[in-house]
Image (cartoon, rainbow, N blue to C red; front, side):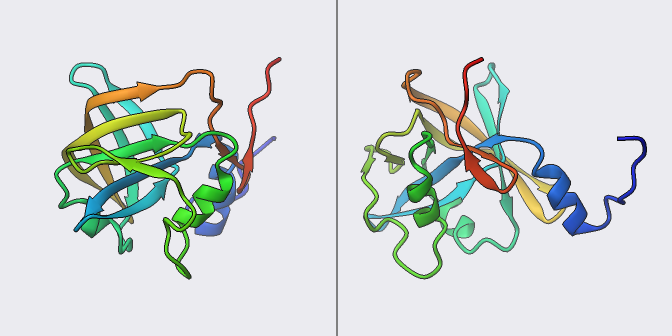
Length: 165
């Protein structure tokens, strides 16, 4: 690469460029009137140890986020490598998102996807504007991790697996 030849104001070029960066895939879910609601966020980042914070970025056009943001607790599930079908289900607009998805809820209202590599019990700490997204800081109240499960990785606009070198 000798020079920069595409401007960051071209959203398609920027989308292609950012696809060069691999990311994990998370499901942010809660109970609403006893039924699970949720969405997928691939922009998940650990932020702070004290206080315990992570962030997700949510499109401002999301129809699910306004329903999630009023819930007392949110369950964040870091999806495992074989959960790409679950990820597609949770992003569906054509059918019930949780159809065929095994999940569990805690007593606080957070919903967690079975088989995920990490579960985080969270509440909203802050929301910040971020262009066409909202940056959501989530405070962690509890966690359950399975370090033997490899995460689902999204890279180059498709799901990938980690390889040990």
